[in-house]
Structures are given as structure tokens and as C-alpha cells.
Length: 186
Picture 1 (cartoon, one colour):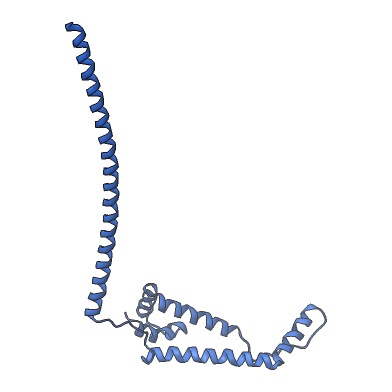
Picture 2: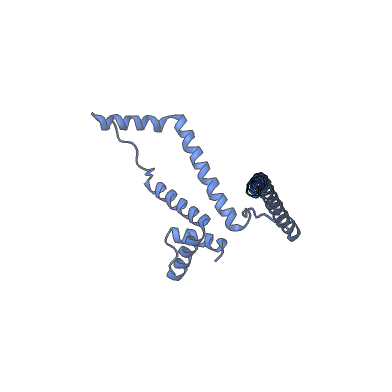
């Protein structure tokens, strides 16, 4: 189910006007799969709960003695303060703008931004990523081969020195053999 259809049902479900259980179930299943709609619904539930707590018709009672009376006097001063009236007006404007945004989205005037990319651009981007990865792999393979070459050269140097030592030992052994043979034949 798409988000536009769910936005149409959101207010009905929020205020209990949606009577068909199947459509309610469909709405809540959509919320499970769509984090944007779920966040918007939870925000509306919280806003509705906060608005339900406001009792605009009740005036702050007169101050009585004690701590409770001091709180009431403080609240009365806040209510009569021009600064707080401006805060109330700003909060009301924000709520109105939020409502207008939701309505505009429902009517399709303010659709979510969707990145439009042509097939050619997408293929070019994917090709660039593949080429970049291949170049990185080649660079890593080249570095590994250089290390192997350096290790082989070092090992070959050690083998060469070992062979030279063996050659010297063989010459010494031959000289010793000749010397022993010369002693025996005399």
C-alpha cells in the first residue's frame, strides 16, 4: 500500500473514525514497514495527547496560602505575561504550519524529493565504482607482488651466500682429500 493512501487513513484511524477493521489492520501493517509514516503517526498521536491535556476554559484559581498557592500565583503571572503570549502564538503558528504541510503532502502538492537519475548516469556511476575498485585491487596486488619480489631477492641472496659457503667447503674438502691422498701414496 502506498504512503498517500495511508496518509488519507491516518486521521481517520487517529480519531477513531475508521470503522472497518480490515482497513485499520492494513494501515498498521503499513506503519510496520514504513518508518516515515510510523514516525508521522506517532508524532500526531503525541500532539493529540498534548492538546487533550490543555484545558483552555479553566482559569488559574486564586492564590491560597502555602506552596500550592505560590505555584498558582506564578502560573497566573506567566499567563498574563506578554512574552508568554508571544510564545503561545508562535506555538500555534508552528502547529498550523505542521498541519498545512501534512495537508499539502496528502494533496500531492509537496511530494517527497526523489532523486531522478537516468539509466545512462546510473550505468556510468556503477562503471566508475567498478573501475575504481579494480584499480584499487590492482594497486594492492602490485604492492603484494613487490613485497614477494623483495622477499625472493632477499631469500635468493641468502641461498647464493649459502651456495658460496658450500662451494668453499667443497674446495676445502677436495684440498683435504688431495692432501690425505698425497700422504697415503708417499
